[in-house]
Image (cartoon, rainbow, N blue to C red):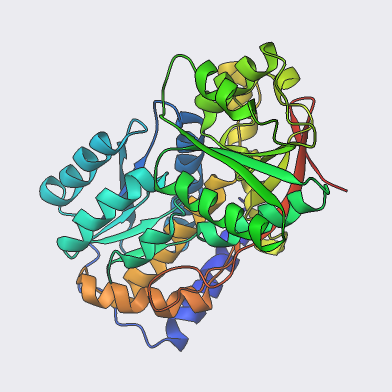
Length: 384
């Protein structure tokens, strides 16, 4: 980013803080440290590494704009390895050893529910980036979320599928709170429309063979199947279904398509329709995209001999980092009660790459943005 752009950001942020009557930190001698938990390895590593890139972009901008009242912001990254046990180890280390007041992450409700419940019990702030189970709303006053919950996605996805005029529907979802949330809301919407729901199947993550559950899924020949799957799991499920010649006659419909589109083999996933989250399309989204590709595009290509694998979730991590920084500046301390109060305030002042980020009374998103897409030839294209 050019110096003039950093200067403009600094002016904007300073104005917000002055309007809000912000107190200032007593000393600029030390950096302000926060934590981040991402799946940097494992099933969801594509998404986790993209989240880290979003956090790095925000960190660059925040520190170039003056940091936290003159103190630089520091992020301590920990790897959840795409599972809850490692997620718990990560947050325990960040809280008990690094003494951070705030943690960004994680990815997957199966990770964010236990980590969020634990950090909330310790009065430590956690801002989830890519977790959507409705149960997250019940965690407590120190837990926040920058992405909309499953009930909205489930309804929107089902409404999209209903336009196919299919009469019979089924779902195949990961057996965790995220998958069950999507299952619940797609099923409710389909039944409300007077269509037939004939099967809801759940699978365990990280299996070597999904053929039995695929065979069971297609026994009753559903015309539409809703698919909720993480990257490498989606790859295997679609490969095996393709080899078995099993495809719903009216198509697969998938939520959060950037969870898997970099992983799958193109010929096994062609024509899948679904939703991509966070496509707000405003000026901040354009700024994020331009800066992202300038910083990571060429370097990644040179290092790995392939384009950088961008997902929807890097932009959410970017927004979460900015909101955290604004709240820390507003609070003027690492007191988590003050930070929590500030988060509710600054979320209404900050307009992010993923749009309006206002928190409701439970720390959840008031508004979310979705775009209908179709997977073709290894790409996600707007559905027309």
